[in-house]
Length: 104
Image (tube, rainbow, N blue to C red; front, top):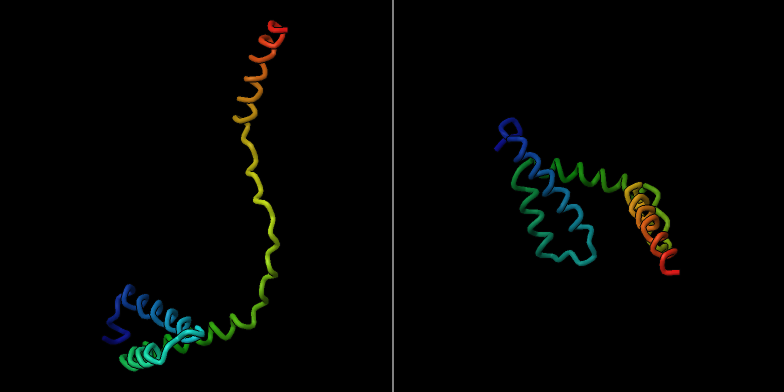
């Protein structure tokens, strides 16, 4: 397996694995066994190490991005009503007015 003979799917799988290893190794609960498994994966192919280093660079850049402010609990916004909903309500009112006049 060399970089020249990898399919796009294989290359994407290596990139995905590098991203997952990067996240896992930065997790507080990453075990020694997982770290050894990562080292085996990284050492299995030069492209693994290359992609992992690229992920570390992305991780470092991401750490310097501003964090969003904590979200305030807000009631979910109701979606705007469509004209059809208004038409149905108007139609029901039109039918109800003669009935109300008759009953009264």
